[in-house]
Amino acid sequence: MDLIVKLIQNIHYFISLFLFLLGFYTMLAKSNLVKKMIGLNIMDTSIFLFLVSTGYIKGGKVPLIHNADKVLRVNPLPHALVLTGIVVSFSISVFGYALIIKIYSHYGTINTKEISKMRGNDK
Image (cartoon, rainbow, N blue to C red; front, side, top):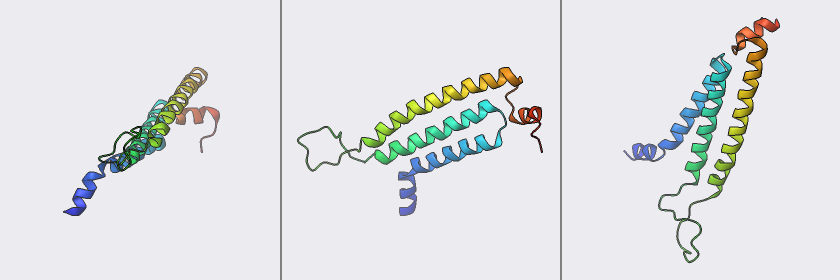
C-alpha cells in the first residue's frame, strides 16, 4: 500500500517520461516533417514538466520571504530554466517550420521517404 501511495505522489515523473517517449517515438516513426516537429515539441514539454516538478516542494513557501528562516522554500532555479527553455524551444520550432516550408517549396512534399527517393538516397 505504501508503494502505491509513493507512485501516486510521483505520478508527474511518470507522465513526463511517457510524454518524452511519445515524442521520441513520433520523431522516429513518422516520415512527415510536421509530425516530427510536433514530436519534438512534445519532448520539450515533457522536459519542462520534469523540471518544474523537481523544483516543487510540498508545503514550500515563496523564496522571497525575508523573515522566515526555518521555512521550506521552493527552488526557483528550475522555473527560471523552464522559462529560458520555452524561449529556446519556440525559436527552434519557428526555425524548423521555416525549414519545412523551404523544403516543401523545393521538393513539393514534406515526406522524408519521398524526399530521399528524389535525391537518389534510397537503399
